[in-house]
Amino acid sequence: MAVGLAELIILGLLVDWLFRHARVPGLVGMLLVGVIFGPYVLGLLSPALLGVSSDLRLIALIVILLRAGFDLSKDVLARVGRMALLLSCIPALFEGVAIMFLGPHLLGLTMMESAILGSVLAAVSPAVVVPLMIRFIEERKGARKGIPTLLLAASSIDDVFVIVVYSVLIGAYTGRHVSIAWKLAGIPISILTGVGVGLLIGWGLYLLFQRFNPRATKRILVILGISILLVRVEHLLEDRLPFAALLAVMAIGFIILEKREHYAHELSAKLGKIWVFAEIILFAMVGAQVNVSLAWRTGMAGAALIFLGLVARSVGTWVCLLGSDLNVRERIFVVIAYIPKATVQAAIGAAPLAAMKAAGMDTHPGDIILAVAVLSILLTAPLGAWAISLTGEHFLETAPPEVHSALDAAHESEASEESGL
Image (cartoon, rainbow, N blue to C red; front, side, top):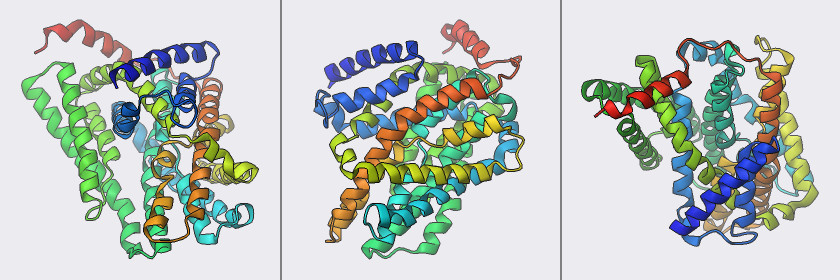
């Protein structure tokens, strides 16, 4: 596995450099590396590496969500809070309902099967959106109106909402007993418990760091370890108490930023270095999940359904922005930023097929759902990442530099690192 990992890192760095020089986001190249060298095309990635793919993707996602938390200012969150809540559910509902009505005509699915497909497709991908928003925050693009922060918060809650809706629909379809009221109540409960636990842990870590003052490298290792354990706790509690671990991860960074801004910038700079490695792993492993032959099985009908669903999603996103202080160009940017699919589709795309098999049902609808989910990644992740990068550069205003920037804090950290414990 070590050799396969080394090959992937070198190839990922090379492709990243080539794509950036072509003015295309490097993550697009990394996704394509995963697709081409993955098990469904050339099959050159190490089987051992693919065996731990889900764990590696989880760690990489935690790294970028922690960085997002360290950039979530309370003042900006307060300003964009209402829009973030709207964006976390309205666009997904528009897309899901559109697919529910179009699925029977385009793919021959029943209304319920189409609704399940809609719930799988309706989630935006934080794996694609969050890294780009972090970059815009560092460049101060859209910072005056808090646009990157708005998308960081909304895209994370969006996934919680969509997965809960999916679990209700698949439970009803397969005949499994599901308390719809409890599942729907689980959306706000999981958000509140996730944020609450994250804030408590972040507060505790702040006090711990104040007391013992470990060097930044040790602080970040402690936070990473706790964040991974929080995801484990979410899985252990999933049948008892709704809990959004990834929101808890972001909340840890948020409270440390509020209590000690210097710590937050210092830790964010460390995570930025880890992200150079984690980014390659995340996007290459996501790409490796894409079964190209399966994706094309649905043909033009699947592509048309995805496109029409995105049109409905874009309408929902625009509705959420009515009455905001965003201008037309900024609203177009938010609409585009809500297009990419990857994380959730790779995670649960095959789940309906498995549930239908377990229930002894016809698995043909599950095959179609999986094929369209895979096709959605293939069509929207690379194009969405490129479009976000392009429109962000041209549509977002650059805010004036702040007195204490994250970059200044990072340089200060490097200078003082060796004097720590």
